[in-house]
Image (cartoon, helix red, strand yellow):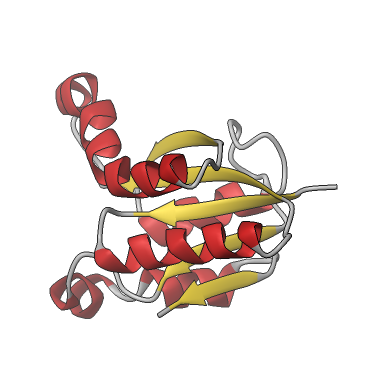
Length: 139
């Protein structure tokens, strides 16, 4: 039985390494049912209508290309809000559109820059501290 795996990405090199780790696990025999999650910051209603999907897809592009090149099929989901909070909600199945709890969360150690980490706090740390399912943090 495949493990429902939530791969949280933001378009950074760390996300690409987390994606590569998921691919490597699958190549080594792990049966993973992968959902790629990308979280956008809060936007006005007008900006949501125009940019949420576009920005989310752009941030997923490199991870989706890596997965496709490796022959790994996946589902995708774009959420909005504080990244750590949304990742934990999806992982636990608390998000209405998550489809239930996941068995594993995979993410990179850092996001799109040290400024976000200093000002906002570490998404990876928030997920580790609050997630109720196993978390694989890839350096």
